[in-house]
Length: 115
Length: 112
Image (cartoon, rainbow over all chains, first blue to last red):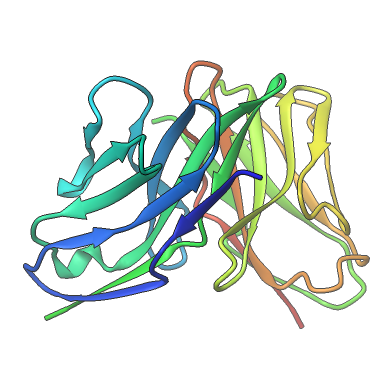
């Protein structure tokens, strides 16, 4: 069965430090990959997506992610985090099943940026 | 600006009552979705609709109902049959050429 695993449920980090949030998926078919961010009591906002082409994808707020097909991973990175990056981050995989396109979600990683 | 509007933001319900959560979009998106979010459980799909007048059950549809009479609107009713309705509910939409979802700001439902 297809699944998305976010390897860390919580990531504490100091301000201005680099951060990597890890995401692995299991699927034998071609996929599209997404990272979303959720601030407290708000909806989800798209950070970046990989559909095709370059495996390094740049998104909003200085985030980037790299698609690694051989390792079935799509890790999110930022070279220097700010307090305002404190939020929940979700990895998602979109795959085609028959006539439907289904989005499978990871359980989320809570990023806590400390001063 | 186009987007998705969920209302109300906070909702309190007494046990045994049905309650309807509103979701409206002006993005001209065909597909719409309802998710439930509980701490540590990520997003779980309740119902989705690919076109008007058609909808499908998601992974946790029991105790919920939906309608899709208009492209712009996809209301969710939480019925008294839903045993644990207290949660954060998110509505999303997707256009035909857009593989990503656009989300509303959510409704937090509390049963008192």
